[in-house]
Figure (tube, rainbow, N blue to C red):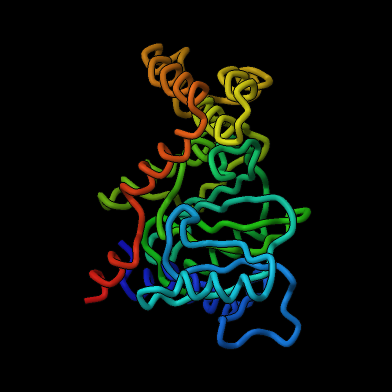
Length: 292
């Protein structure tokens, strides 16, 4: 497991932004509310230092709204930062390190949205600059374990916006040749590790019908929610990672039941997503307890 000092550098959005600056890694311009730039953008993001699944992130459409949002998010003593929007397509780089040594890395981009714009479908890509950036972060922190960076890119040039000090959804990486859970298990057991970093191959599509359907239902589109039960292009072009009915027929039960509920009551999708996030969210109270 990574050292607590390293963990603190990436768990906080504010400290992660400072880390990227120190390493010369590209990110959208950012500032703290008490030290705005001379030419602030008309619209920007306001972020609590600690939050989960976008709960502490708000979009300000004016300077006045940004000030109000910063005050709201700072309630309870939480540090806050502001940041310009990043252009391009959303992506992630997922990596596993052995005391700063990269042993596996995978890059993928959004191929279909779930609730809140999450990556319900993914396409693996070859983004060497994103891989180099996560390697630089891992080396600088002597990171041990999983690490995931979120970014937006234009033609493979990334700007980083977020860090998760863990591995995330591993289905696309596994389909592209990087078994992140297996690497983590080998790392924890002290088993043999690859001599060179395992790199995911590009061009692999994966999806979750359930996540796609919930994402469609959350926007009020019953038709798209039902259509998501059969991913466009079929199983030959995109692999199901959550409910593979052809391999596990019983997995059709939660898929059909959940989608049916979402179609009948689209307003319940946000409650369902919120309930799931509540079970793992990092809240200000959690941070205060850990800091004692």
